[in-house]
Image (spheres, helix red, strand yellow):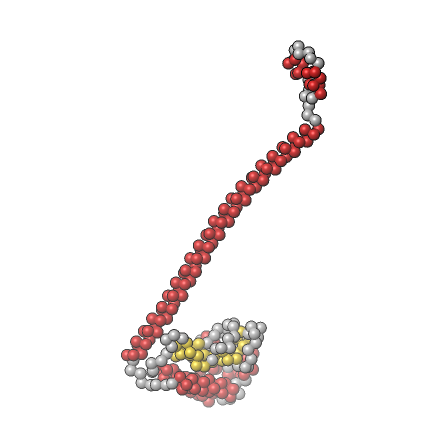
Length: 259
């Protein structure tokens, strides 16, 4: 820039254009720094704008995904509510049908809930007494339980199932089986009495591993540790169905596994 100033100040305008081309016009260091800074800022702005566009696109995808999941959750909740309504309707219709059936059935036997509960619990005591009289209880618990699932799931043949435990018995086989058949016969008779009246009774036994619930289960040890589960059922729960609720008449007797 100094040479250009001297050229103009000299007052000689002859061949000015030619001489201007001969002058090397250069920027000062400050001007170069500012130009480089401007170029760098322009690159930063371009990069930030590109990043902003990518973020906008990602935010749009996230909003669409959130809307999709919210709609999916709404649909699933609607299905769940509909299933609950259908279940309640089915239970209500079932109860109505049972009541209609009860109205037409010539019931031949009437038994109160207290009487039914007493008979049910006496049957358990009879069976428990039979086991304690004829078997080594500890041996049954430790040696047999869990090794042969058929002992729990397929006891249709009384004699065959009882024979599997024969080596643990301390009494003679014939009398033992005779007493067992008597207990089973009493159970069938009780069931027939329940079916011969206009009330609806049910039995329930829990699968192994189910959480212990004191309100409907009676632990054989009388203890109810937090986190305990059912090891096996010794005697089922006995309950009755009313129009609007279930009434537990006798709790399920269970052996528990501590946590």
